[in-house]
Image 1: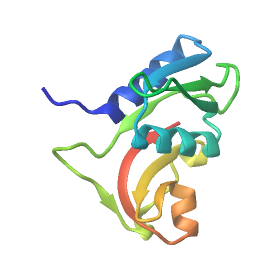
Image 2 (image 1 turned 90 degrees about the vertical axis):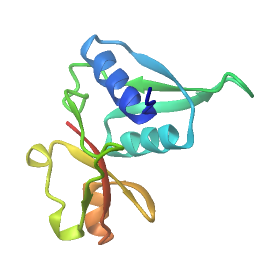
Image 3 (image 1 turned 45 degrees about the vertical axis):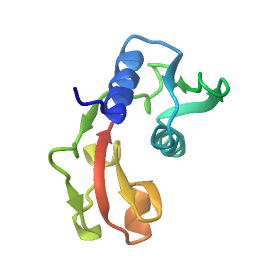
Amino acid sequence: MVKDNLSNFIVVLKNASSTDKSSVLFPQSKLILAVAEVLQRAGFVKSFTKKGKKRGKFVEVELLEKADPSAIKGIKRISVRSKRIYRRTADLRPIRNGFGAAIISTNQGLLTNKEARKQKLGGEVLFEIW
């Protein structure tokens, strides 16, 4: 059995957003914290906080209301364990005519496609969100 925490996290976010939940709890990891931070910077989530100590560490992500135009409407996983997808700076295009974002893993950390183009960085495209 293959465990892909990132895929599970983005599916939980999409499902919670479509059912009008206000927040989501998910087990904490460095990657999940970095993704939550990028999503907050991009305006797709309100905030995130760390919960618990030692064994029971969780991340609570507070979602935007469904009526908000920048609320999560869809997510598509691009790069998976069996097939990694990398893009150069020139190949980073706007997602959904600029209303979405691609989350990219670069050597400077996780960035959106807009931030990566500004810094002229390419990397592994993890997922698209709109």
